[in-house]
Length: 143
Image (cartoon, rainbow, N blue to C red; front, top):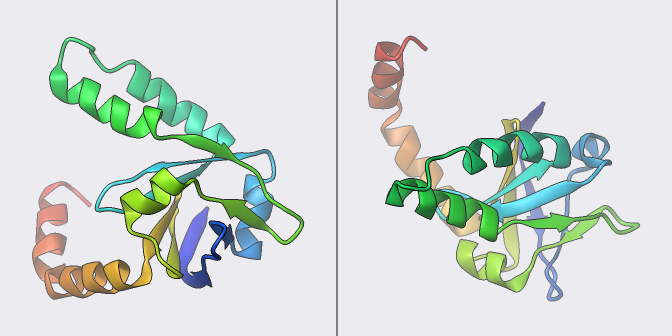
């Protein structure tokens, strides 16, 4: 499982080091794609297959289902690790997430999220302020 928050720098070639503790879980391959809230999602290849099957099973007759499938599937790219444990993030994904030099890699159980550090800090501050309301809503959902 992926958990924790890690700061890493993106180099000028789009290479990003993935925390060493996660590399073993991604050794069979990984897929990066557009995420929600202007971040990127990084899945193990095994988890990606499960997620992609769910997207593929959405009804193509519904425009929102088509749009979401396109967002997630068309934007996806398989990535591998170099000898220093870095992946290369394609330019269109770096642009989508507004990634500059300083990034945050956040572990969210079955995926990693890759954020621009400033965007992450703003999102986190906003979420922390709303934590009571969020908790109440989740309580209504049985969490």
